[in-house]
Length: 218
Image (cartoon, rainbow, N blue to C red; front, side):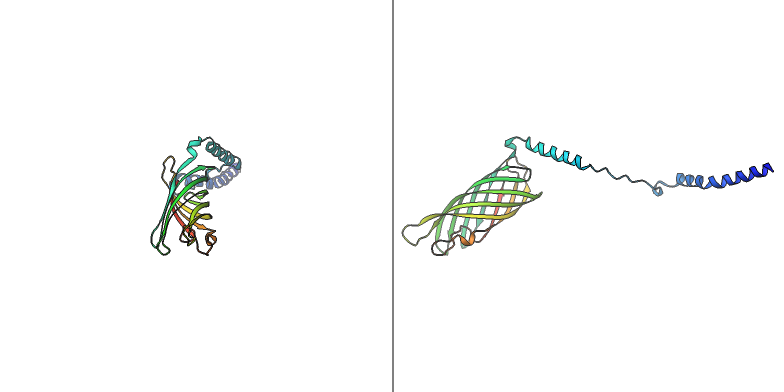
């Protein structure tokens, strides 16, 4: 009787442990390509760690020498046809932050109109802010003052200062030079174009339209 009970217990024990052994053997002999692998997600730095990295980057920028944040260059514009406009402007800028550049420039412009018979030279200056919204795209705000010649239809012509607030954007290509960091293809809109008139209602802006296009090295 005891032997029968022992035999029955051993059979039941074998039935209990056999599935687990078969599962282990099946996992052991299963090809690597069919085994279940546990993928571990990369650890993301917590908000505190990201703040430390950002502060470190900002500190490194602030520690840069003054000369390494200076930009030198200039812009030029060319328009040929009924109105000839040749514009040269040396410029200097300074990196206030990693994305924001402020600068100034002086401008000399030769202007000729075949229709009105003008053949004049304008001069002035500008101040600007350039902010990078993407690695190669900037938005630009500029204020330009130009001294222009006004035809009074008399023996003596006069000169007059006109202000041109402009807004626009530029597409930039890095150059990697120390002072000329990139070339910028710029398009601006003159917000005051329609108000730049002489006493007779003629537009005296040196630009042929409110749209101003330049190529700037800075």
